[in-house]
Amino acid sequence: MAEETQNQNQEQKKEELDSLLKKILYQGVAKASEAIDYVSKTVSGLVGENKITNEEGKNIVNNFKTNIDSKVKDMETRLRETISSALQNVRPASKSEVEELRKRVEALEKIVAGLD
Image 1 (cartoon, rainbow, N blue to C red):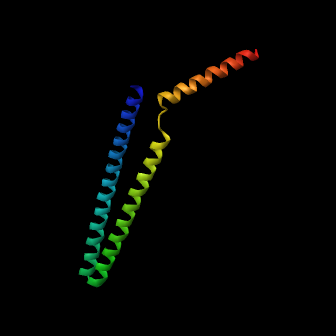
Image 2: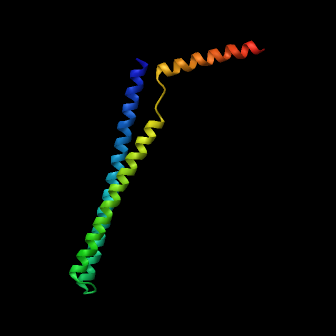
Image 3: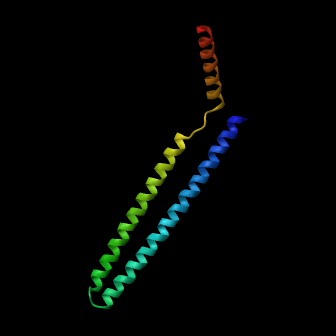
């Protein structure tokens, strides 16, 4: 029963971390979208002022979008790897593992008591 509860708690933590990951990614995507809009407007202004050609403007915006998309995907991969690693490192001990450790401690206590 206790092991089942631990598994449920671990699943809940995974879901909470997954939810947090999604929030972080959505915020990142929203900021990336804002950045793309800003660059697009700035480039449009430069094209309108004849400081760059329409083709140059399209290339700038497309290159920026490609760069942003790549960075968002990289960020998502890193976050997933970090969370996965963290979950593996915080796995609670099972009931049987705790019982085994208890037995070992008792055996060591008997040995130490015999040294007195």
